[in-house]
Length: 482
Image (cartoon, rainbow, N blue to C red; front, side, top):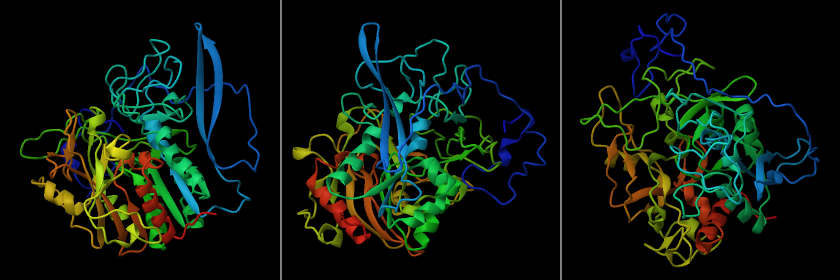
C-alpha cells in the first residue's frame, strides 16, 4: 500500500472518509515498494525453555525474570506478560485492559544494551543504546534507519521498554506510561479487595464479546492504539448497558490492525498537516509517510486517526485527545473540583472534596500528579479551542449529557507543550485547562467515567480522595470489594 509516482494523493481527503473515496482494487497507480534493511517483525528464535502456567494462577501481570552478570555488573532482564483467567473459571466482576498495543508502538531498541537497575527510556526520538550497531531500533515514533516511515511492529520481538519497573520521560519525574504506570491501578485494586481479570489489547481484538462477561471494564494507562474490532466491541458493550472506567489519556487515538496470526501490528501515520491558516504541523509531531498512504495492507481499510475515519472516540467514551507535554516534572498538573455536588463525590463514600479543591496529587501537591504527558478534553471544549475549520472538514457538535466533575489544570507551561484543536492544529490552552474528568450516561446506552489523563492511575495509593472517588464510581457500576 505504498503510493507510486503516478498516485494522486489529492484524491484522498485529509479529515474524513468519503463513500467510495478510493477504490483499492481498481487502483493501478499504487505501484510502489519501500525496502528497509533494518525491517524485522519476527526474530524466529528457537524455543529453548517452556513454563506451564497452572489454571489456578491469579490472573494479572506477570514477569519472567532473568538474572545474570555482564561485564562485572549484576543485571536483570524482565519479560512482562499477561495471564488471563482460565476459561473454566468464573470471571471477576471487573475487567482491566492492558494497553499492550501502546507498549508495542513505543518499543524502540528491542535489542537495547542491558543495564543494571531500572531502565530510563528516553522519549521516542532517542532510543536506548543498542547492543549491536546494526540491530533494529525503530518503532512507531522513530523511522527506519534510512528514514522510511514505520508502519509495522512485530509481536514476536523483545520489548525491554515494557519491563514492569522501566521509567520514561521526563527524566527525574518517576513517570512511566507502560506497565509501571498500569501496576498502580492493579496494586490499588488488590489492596482494597477488588477482584479483577486482566486481558491484553490483542485479547480484546480477537474476542470483543468477552466484555459482556463483566459488570465494568477499566481502560488503563496510555491506551492509545485500538483496532476496529476492539473499538466497535467497546461501543457495543456500552450500548448493551455496560459501564467503562477510563483511567487513560490520549485514548483510542490511532487505528491499528493485525495480521491473521496476530503477530504483526500495523498502523499508518502520515504527514497530513492541517489545512489551516498557517499550515503548521503540531509541535513535535511523530514522523510519518506521505499523505495517501493511510490505507492498511492487512485489511485495505483507511488508518491514521480514528477521528479522521468518521469514528471519533468521543462518541464512545466522551473525550478526545487534546495535547501533550514532555519537558520536565513541573509539567504535571492536578484536578480541580468543578461540580462538588455531584453524587460521585459523596455516595457511598464522602471524599471530603469541595468546590475548587485539588486532588490527583501526592500530599502537598507533590509528585505524582495526574495531569501531564498526554490528556483528553470534551468536544464542547475542543470547539472553543478550534478557531479554523479546514476546507472539506466538519467540526462535530458537542455531546449531550456529559457532566464535568473536575478540570485538569497545568499551571506551568513547558517547552515541549502541544495543545491541539480538533483537527490537530496548534492552539492555545484555556487558562491551563488540559484534561476533563467526566461522568456520562450515554444517550445510546451505557455509562462512562473518564479521568482524561494518562497519569490518572499514577496517583492511586498516594491520594486518598481520588481513591474514594474511584471506589464510588465502581460502586455505582456494580463492582464492590469481595
